[in-house]
Image (tube, rainbow, N blue to C red; front, side):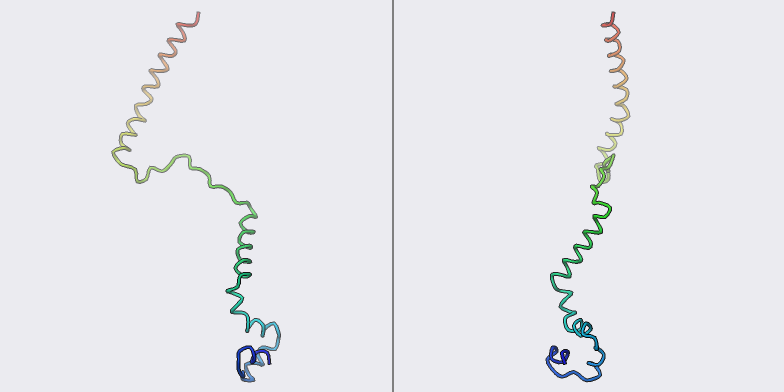
Length: 106
């Protein structure tokens, strides 16, 4: 009996009768080895890679605005004021540029 010789001793008749198929006997003897072998892990990685590539591996989209979580509150307050009053400077700069353009044009 293949099962009894592989396990290194005699196996009761009731146990050996359960494994009539040679495939079942082979699985019973070598099944625990299969899970630790190279081929099993390689196959799992290959299946996972194939599944990932079905729709393509896409790059992560960059965020439009970077999160300000964890930034110094004093800096954040100053940043708010800077953004608020930045528009005033732009208006005066645009007005001055318009004056210069009008004076230069005949």
